[in-house]
Image (cartoon, rainbow, N blue to C red):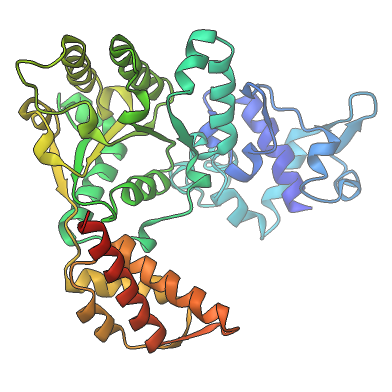
Length: 410
């Protein structure tokens, strides 16, 4: 009953106060109203929508609620009676405190001790919704030019990203840089006010498998913003003149999807050291990339730029200067390897000695440690066992070492 009244009152109050935005609508309710073009105002609560929340017959027994039998719209016949009834229900107070739309109305209502600002902080913004991303993409697809742009990137809603920072073993310096980006996102207005706009451009450097991509995805989930992911090799055309255009298109997509993270992998593919005998089109592509980096930032465009490379020595010095922070992802030291083993084995039953595994895995990346656990689990399953032993893990360590030796022999 309370959830149904919350739904109807949220729609009613949202429609009455134009200063309220889609970000004020609670995520669970917002998702009920998405159409092909996003959320339309006014919000209309149809019977079929209400049925997703509760038993419509119950709410129709209330004296201030009715339904239009022709349009199947649930309506509030007496707004004053509805808000008084809801406020009188003890269990509704916590609902109001977690619903910015209701909190906006009730913050000055009697002595309920309601804070709109506090409710707003608890509510995830609309760009955290996969439906929001789909609606923006649908609009872009209507134009052939922008539809072509979308083919160059992979788009992730934060809802669809499976990893978060509880799955990532980062060192203190890496975590500090992540926290700085969080703060910068929250304080964009202040940073713009003081003229500090060149913020939010990070270059991740380190060997494959050390967590660069995973960290970018986890940050997208934590900040509740979409991730625009691109590999430079995928936008480098066989017709070199097209590469510059593709680079411009990728940055344009990011600006249109703001706030977001633009993650460029294989960054050295185009942004390599320039030489005098290089093809002119490659030079133009590098210059376009540098110009595009200069013309985008978190404060003014709402775009966090993260570039990643396994080969930092190939980068042009002019590229390094474009980033406000270089974040290293080295092969994990002992304490980080221990943490990765703990995370990877946290849901796996068995008897194992993590300290021995840490000692034997010197030089392993995070991806290779996860591969050790994968091999041990699968070998155990082959013999019909869901518990792994230390010997399973030790055998897997040797298998991964053999694979690494094989890789370096070619």
